[in-house]
Length: 612
Image (cartoon, rainbow, N blue to C red):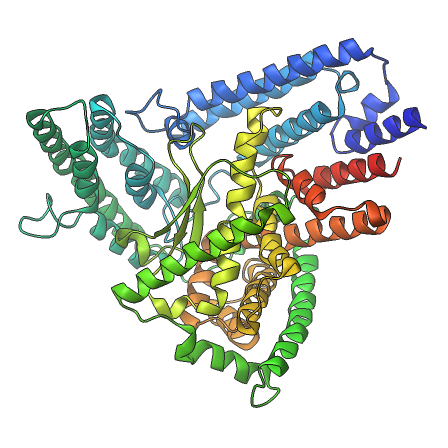
């Protein structure tokens, strides 16, 4: 029976790999000692490639807490991208030449399949490398660079302060590469829609406003940051600190300001060529690109039409659950749209749009996370060591940034995980969604999944530090629901907020595919959201604009959540009394981010072992 089970599990894993069928037909037998040796060798192979890849990427080094090239920026030229492609092809070839899948244990087989899948997908999708907007209102070099320096580039000594200044000086050359990239896209008629341009100009102006760019004005965010970090140094005297700050000011005036001015000049020129067409369909081979994007985001073979229909079905189901809450709170009638209007406009659901109101929201979010921490043993066996903090999005990017997001901790523990909440306009941050949002971005959502993955000791680095939208965001959306199963969301309005956030993700399936495949306009998308969700119009507009510049990204949430739930229900049905929610959740978060097909194989393997 055990031999049959082992063969069954091997076939499950093999079918997830491109070479699975061939290797199954030519299956070889290996001793336990050979399998152990090959597993160790494979993990060293994976880690060596990961380390080598990171060694060519200074930004990624810094995000991981590595300070090897702490004074440099990552090369963003197309020439560099082509070189990276060749490295990728060589890595995949080396995998196939060096290892036989039959000679690996189950866990290493998953690593093999995942590595192979990621390499092949990246190679296949290289032709779409220009089908994006490297500058947009959500993110881009212009806004991520100052955010990176402020939040990621720590300064523990004089050398690291000098590296910060070197990076300031290097922004000019980096932006030259960025402008070349924008021009290459423009030649292919890949230009952001018109609405993007004013956002970017506004952000750029904010970044180079204040001292030292404007005498007598408030201190610029970058200058404030480097000044604070330098003044806290213990290995520098006052004269040295003054000199470092002076050099930072010089770098900002000589490099940073001209770089942003040059970008804005080209951006205004590019705006003249922009149109109001929003969907991916307008891009060269846009339909094929969107199909590839959906496949990468969802890690499934679902078509745009299938995703659209799933969204419509899920919206209808959640509307039904919302009507039950309307009854609980004794709403004046049974009209869901009237209830939506009430939730959008009633002042009891919003903090004042003042400094005090914004801080009150942040403090409450901290409490929600702290309360959830106490109950985690009911849901998990493994808990993260990394801490988490709640921060407001910085003023220089809050006007255009998304409503909330998470930033991973440093591998060495020098930086905590961060839940960012956008408090620019408090009418877009309803209190009834506070619980679900904190669970999604913090605990048990992104922080649990990402911090635990980083801290695993028996897994290759590429799995601990990788990710795909369906898994990462699917887990976070699943995490909004799980607390209800252990007694949270006692306030029916808060439970409505949970449903509202799930509804939003279901509506995204409809709207994203509507915009990019069915040629919906922004106005059509706004109308759909207004009629089917309770979210404020300003929030809806930001979301729609997000989908436009990130085709397919928003579809991963609901599809990933549904898969995790479906697999859980399958496991509960097959295991009966043997099913333990803590074991299931641990299985998902201690396996690193996986595409949905490999995740399904892994859960099936786990169930088969427990039923044997």
